[in-house]
Length: 204
Image 1 (cartoon, rainbow, N blue to C red):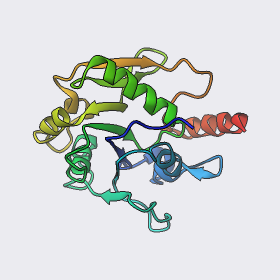
Image 2 (cartoon, rainbow, N blue to C red):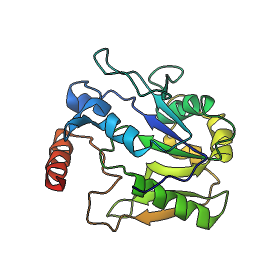
Image 3 (cartoon, helix red, strand yellow):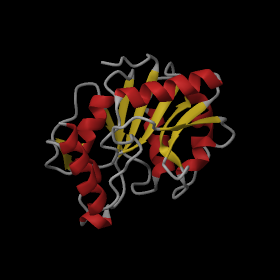
């Protein structure tokens, strides 16, 4: 078991209309017997603070003890405002914050350890994020210095893109080299979900 470094918070964004899934919340899709949100909460168990931002369906199971749920203001105003709402629930003594899309079934403790390692090597004001195989930065699979993100989040308007949260922050980029499925893989489409289920079955 890879231990998390202490002092970081995790914000998991579960908003979005999920039109490709007929409005069903992507965080509640099941991969290998657990919802994606359950898998992500297991991966972030070592965080000092965990905040889920967005509305969950009425039939969803309860969140683990200590996990907070908040809603962006106004509802449906996008990921940047969702992070703003999540940060309001994060204790001031958390010096780093993982900002994560709510549809990452293969986020792991090892992936978070790598993010912390790269960010720490860069310095206290550096962030770290994963890039996909084409080199695209995965803004919602990263670890960031909390205070600069707080300052940026205070200025974002409804509908603002997530990347505005990271303006002025030096970032270290990571390519996932392990043979296991990448932590940045998100389930945006039914085809993505089918791929995730196939990979998860192969891991058993």
